[in-house]
Amino acid sequence: MKKSGFTLLIFITLATLLSAFLQSQELAQSKTPAADRTLVLSHAEYLDRVQAIWTAQMIAQYTGSRFEHQPASVLPETPLSHLPSYAPVDDDYYYEMVAVRAFEKYGIGLTVQQLGQQWLENNAGSWGSSEQALLLLKRGIKPPDTGHPRYNKLWWTIGPQFSSDVYGALSPGMPNVAAETARLLGHINGYAEGTDGAVFVSGMISIAFVERDPHIIVRKAATLIHPDSPYRKCLDMVIQMADGGSSPAQIFRAIDERWGIEYPATNNAVVNGGFVATSVWFGGGDFQKTIQLAVHAADFADADCNAANAESVVAAMSGMRALPPEQVAELHDRIKGAEMGPLKLTPPVDESISELARRTAKLGMANLMSHGANDDGSALRIPVEEPETQPAELFKLADLMRYWNPDWTLERAGFGGAGGGMPGIRGITYLDGEILATYPRDEVRGTVLRRTVRLGNQPILKFKVGVDQGRAWQLQVYVNDDRLLDKLIEGVSHARSWQEINVDLAKYQGREVVLRLYQRVLIPHHEAGNAYWRDLVMQ
Image 1: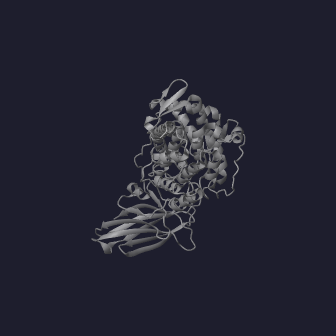
Image 2: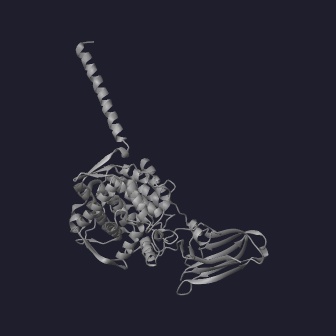
Image 3: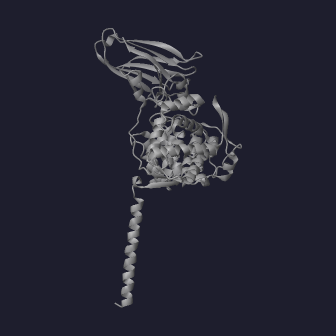
């Protein structure tokens, strides 16, 4: 071989080795655990992204509200709505504003009980689980009970989810801190699936300060939620379908068909959380693409909340430059409103968005410093957290019997949705003090209360059943396989009516029997409704 050829061979070999080394270094860096990474965030950039999170919610909510609990948009390009020279106050961000006030009053270690005091002061809680929480607060019930299924009949809905953006904004690069805060404070108006939504959204926003790839953001935030949760199962389905090449439309349809039957209320957390995840995943960090996905997702969804949550992630990724300049200008840096739904806000809102952002960033810096970040006067150095799965927070409708009558089990009850998102849904299962309300998950088979018991002498089964005005259901009582009662429970008065039921079980005395109380709802010429049960005893 000639010398020149030998030299060229050595050069090629060295270049190849150098290229392989550099590639290995890039790969190693891409796999560096988050715990070994530091997010350097200047004060100006942090403030910019926080202001973008607030502003994006306001713009997205206003456009999304056209499709809230309505048929979805089908236009190829749905135009953004023009704002009326300010952001009209809305629950999508008002409860977050209330949380900021509470942090300022009580400190960064805010408790859910203190947040409840702030809700009372500001009259926060206009609709859904938030309305239920405020009603409970005014009755003297304290958080976290105000969000628990024992008291809040809409605990599984979207209230905590659309109120959680601020917890991500306060915790950039620290998704575990964001998620822990969101779970803790989300208990003011939700539980289990409800607070899972708060964990997911706050986690995405926290992660979006660090990651540029929406796929990574969704994947990592999903791992904050325990795999046994229905919310996590929905997210896993979204990710699996996206990885498998499914289109956004296919995934939206699959979410609706799989989870929308389980949770028919249009404001439920699981379905809408899946829509948010899909919108972020396929939105590519682009405001227009993301909002188009959110408003096209499905008929009768909580479109304004979903658009606002998804755009908060975009804002956390890129700041104000990612937002549509025309709509930003139309806000005139103002949030205004004296009422929200049926409530007068105390005090009325008339605030600067940029000042709200400054207050939030100040709180965020205090929060970060309390969790190990450093501030050199111009920039924050934040130790980036790897998301850790939270312990499971699970609740099934059948678990209501623990609080109502643990001698009996509840089977095939449905979530329903009356009183949340869309009125007129036939029924809902919940507990109201000593009253158990039920509606079947499966209208063909009905809901059943079941108990196995050994009867004594001269046994009698006694209970009261109720029905709402204009509604009806069929009560059937079985002892073993014998149907002892088949009775129409019909609401003919102007208010909820009650009937006392006494079933003589003397012929079965001394025997172990299975008692079944059925609520059937497919009754010709009658409108189905809730069954109400109370004072269920054996004598």
